[in-house]
Length: 116
Image 1 (cartoon, one colour):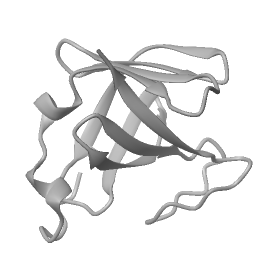
Image 2 (cartoon, rainbow, N blue to C red):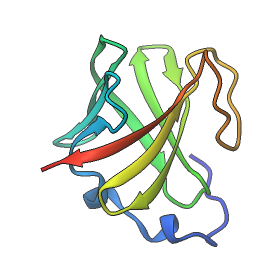
Image 3 (cartoon, rainbow, N blue to C red):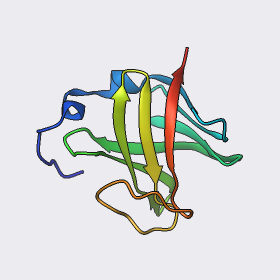
């Protein structure tokens, strides 16, 4: 991914800040689990995505987070830390990527809490 500006506290974040299992804080189904290496397990609205690779660019504000769900299919997303155990996350399943969070029915914004 291309590097961007370094004006955010998120730019100081790294992969160890993402370690663990994250669940949607509003009670709806949605989880993200970062596993060894560059694999992530994602479940959105009950749909379990097979273990996928991802790329992440902490230098962007918000953080760019792209998941490879098939050999030639990348789902783009955004992420932002609200605190050490809370992230705001949006995936653009519709394919309409935005450089900032835009809550839409097709591409909802999730607030995820780290499960301890």
